[in-house]
Amino acid sequence: MTQETISTDVVIIGAGPCGLFAVFELGLLDMKCHLIDILDKPGGQCAELYPEKPIYDIPALPVVSGQELTERLMEQAEPFGPQYHYNEMVEELEKLEDGRFRVKTDGGLVFEAKVVVIAAGGGSFQPKKPPIPGIEAYEGKSVFYSVKRMENFRNKNVLISGGGDSALDWTINLQPIVQSMQLIHRRDGFRAAPDSVNKMHALVEEKKMQFHLGQITALHGDNGQLEGVTVKGNDNNEFQVECDTLLPFFGLTMKLGPIANWGLNLHENLVPVDTEKFQTSEPGIFAIGDINTYPGKLKLILSGFHEAALMSQAAVRYAYPDAKVTFQYTTSSTSLQKKLGVA
Image (cartoon, rainbow, N blue to C red):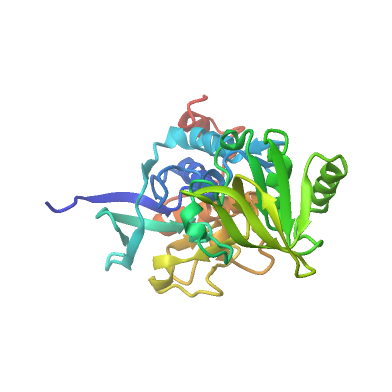
């Protein structure tokens, strides 16, 4: 049976925070959206990698988790009736003779849209694995590359490996609920916020955790259950560290996947855009959030929100060049308030 083509104003590739906020901004301009995401739920990297990790730099929200931010953005977008398509990866993107875009997914969905917005974060992201022999046997059982539920680590003997923000943040956030906390890093310098490093050192001084210098060379245990690791210290001497859970935080490898084959200009696996419209090298295709690049780019969620707002103004003019577009404020426009269901 031939898959029915779905017609819409906008296809948004990626249902992370920037894609979700774009629904709101486009909705205010009467642009209907369908969102496609390779994950099985909304929220992108926020929900997948650190749903419970606090975020501190969202305007007006002194602290919010990735999960709560996702839920609030979904609620904000709800009045505009967006359609979500999860567990789908966009494989083909082509421009039709009438100027619209045809988008096909690996699951057989076909869309035709006036505008395409790429909000795919860094593309598909995969954790960098430490070069430890046999680590695969422990993955998902006692070795984890992300923390999706803090409660899963309660009363565990946790060893965290790494020296970046994720390693330090989770050391501090998990320490109160675990049986024991240890951190290992190959040197005493860190690529993390100084405040986090200071907090970690304070926990060590208070004997609430241990810090080791060195690198893990071997894992020990049976049937995927970790019992301890061998560490090679900076003096080349080996020592053993007991633990039942290992969290290696060595960063992420970003892969653009099919985006690299869509004919867009790329720069170091990112999509260059202008800062007026956030349009790519292909008119009608826009890119917002971590996937794009331009002079002065900051990879912050709040920057992506700003990009979504300007992109939306350009997108409606591209899709409906003859329409009169009047800029309005939600605080004073009764027509916008009716759209939001608050008038």
